Length: 98
Image (cartoon, rainbow, N blue to C red):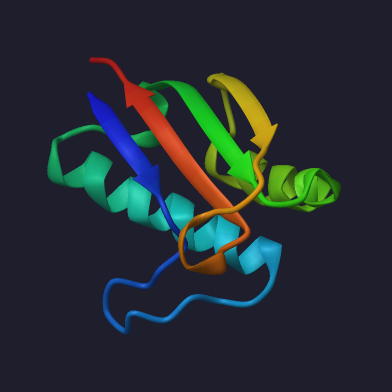
């Protein structure tokens, strides 16, 4: 399953958290909701692409990311990009396999 880049926008409120940690958590929660709706879980994720507006946020993002992927870490790439939609700090694209 290919999940398009998830932004850190709370679907219930339409709001975006401020910090990179909160934004990473929200983007991964959004990913988790899609995975669950399709009968998948984080354990099925084989690859992620993380887009950051500032590579200096990598360690903070990675700390949150590692709470969601606790066993076999999926393959991952991370890029700094010039700009993300709505001025967010992170976007995460995911591929999962059953």
